[in-house]
Amino acid sequence: MKAEAYYPGSKNNSQALHYLKRFQPQNDEVKHIRVLLYGPVGVGKSSFINSVNNVFQERMTQKALTSSTTADKSFTKKYKTYTIKREGSVNYPFVFNDIMGLEDGDGRGVRADDLKLALMGHVKEGYTFNPISSLSHDDLYYNSSPSISDRVHVLVCIYDANASQMKSSVLQKMKEIREAASELGIPQLAILSHIDEACGETEKNLRNVCNSKHLIKKMGDFSSSLGIPMNCILPVKNYSEEIQLNQDVDTLILSALRLIIDFGDDYAAKLKP
Ligand SMILES: Nc1nc2c(ncn2[C@@H]2O[C@H](COP(=O)(O)OP(=O)(O)O)[C@@H](O)[C@H]2O)c(=O)[nH]1
Ligand SMILES: [Mg+2]
Image 1: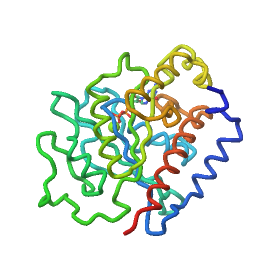
Image 2: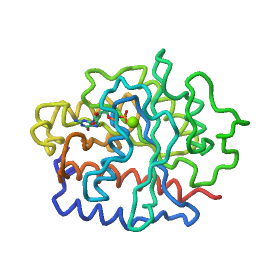
Image 3: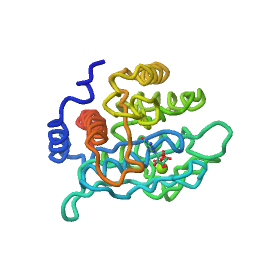
Image 4: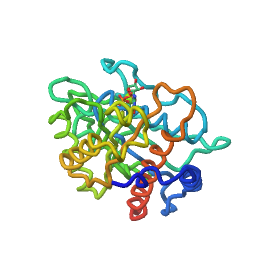
């Protein structure tokens, strides 16, 4: 893989940001592209949303609360839409939801059937996912007639590149949700987060992402176990402990986001109210 694939030059950041700041969905009926981030607790779903927000506000921000301890089971159980603020009271036309997967036997997370409902836009804002039972049609939080903006337009599975081993139960769950998304024709991508911690080379310099044999292998493994092509596996380092913006972090966030939004937009373009 060529370095230019991820680091095509310093001009690239402002170009990508400019493109995304001007972005409008092709479909006039679509208010925003809805991105669903899916993955186990602690992989960096909230951090990715925060990182996107930092890049757009051009400063450090705190938005989707991140958990500093992954043992915290109370995080991100509610279905909540995160927006990125533009000037005034306007938001950018892309929004994020994050959902934590249900891991085997741990009694937390979100059930596969609820995930499917979320993909179709049936889950109303504020619904608290219940690991024991799924959202029923007569529930107050069931949206029986979702608009095309309520629907999910692109699914992004997230996993931690630093995880010593990719849990097969987690990958299995990701496969299931991917299949549900495929049935609906929803495009899918995957983020490999924590690349700064995944190997010595990227720890020293994020730009080594394309030279790190270890990381390329991780991306390849993730790609083949999920069945997502290699060019849809996006290596990312989220903002975590930084106190100021960093150009190399921004580059990865922006190139991931650009692909995510373009894929979602192509799908949304085909939807009819
Ligand atoms: N070093 C590093 N830390 C990260 C990265 N992404 C997330 N974190 C940290 O991992 C922890 C869990 O992240 P969080 O976003 O809450 O995960 P979530 O449960 O998937 O929403 C937090 O302490 C984050 O600061 C990353 O890419 N690199
Ligand atoms: Mg979270």
